[in-house]
Length: 230
Image (cartoon, rainbow, N blue to C red; front, top):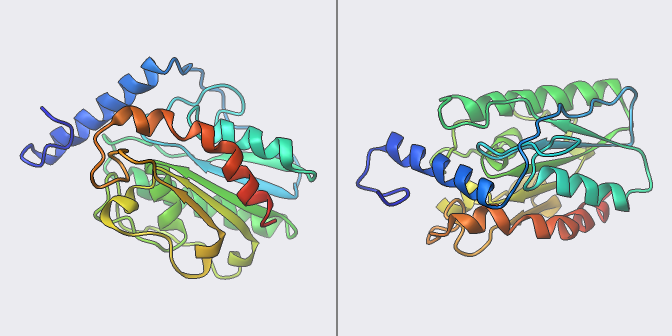
């Protein structure tokens, strides 16, 4: 069966997508280590909040995601002259869990809202890959309904937090596949990349390997974008 064959039942298309992503991750030789993301003991200047992709292996420390989260965090660490901390959004990142995106959406909003209250001078960089990009989209009030692994908004960041979101970094953002993008107050702070032929964000995409291998090399470019907005 072809991936996302429109004639196939929806749940079978989703199962095929998970299998393809898992196989591509394995082919790329990405390690399956799953250490917990580091939690800041004290307030830092910048908190990097990452929502990983569907079925994405967490990889090495700090366990934010082998494809995007870890490479982006390390690229940021090399460029930041201020203190920083990582936070991994806690959610299933699964197609088998019907409310996966909503769980991530709530966790991201709860974490950022709580951290903003506890650390009045802290700023945030939000990072989302694949399904994780839907999590970020929903959290800033951009619905991912109708997109692959998307869903309705469960919670949004309050207006009081909005000025403290320095940058949003999105990779393989599924809403791009339905002709949507981040608009509103966050638009000029958003780096949103979709590689050609990526079936998650490119409406005509067919190459799952592109979805898995093309975004890690963009970590430095994304980090530069974020640092320039701090």
